[in-house]
Image 1: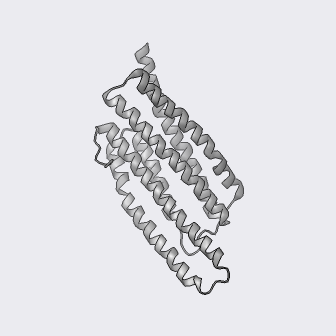
Image 2: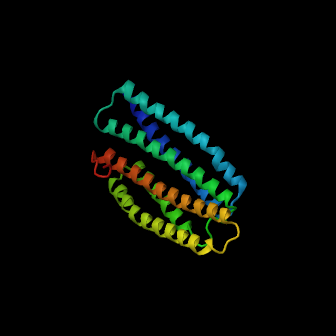
Image 3: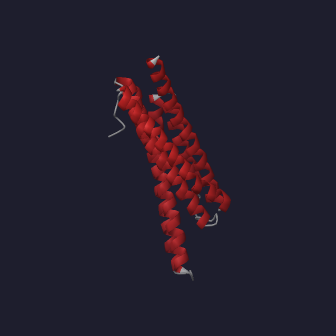
Length: 222
């Protein structure tokens, strides 16, 4: 019976990490809607909902600690628990970034950077997280490696977008009446690009821990 309970706890842990991933991705998609629309109700839903993500994160973290302390797992089980523990942190950070994005979109009233379309970048970053979590759920190390390689493309997209935003600042600076408003808009757009790039970085972290969990291979961690 104790062994069966232990295995049930491991399955429950995997299931809750995956479910938290679903919640975070749902909030991320809502945040992207706010970037496009500036909708205040949706922004509030994302921002206020971050607390529930944090609470769930801490609850699952406690489960990981309890499993390690009381069950003293070894080998594959220990890798799964520690990988899940690290993935939790990345999911919580993606939730924080979704909150940032919702705030940026609301402050900009849906006109974050009219000269730069950030939607394709946001979609790439979100798909990376979704695919990384799918690789984790299915113990698919090869898929995790493939997802991680997409980060280079995302980085290039972010660099291109940042350069375009900076060019807009240079072009508009001499002709604008409200310089402070222009600087606020450009700064907000650059912060958005930065946070989208970080979403992709967290997807890579999830992939690295999945590869380690499945194959005891730390190639992507360092």
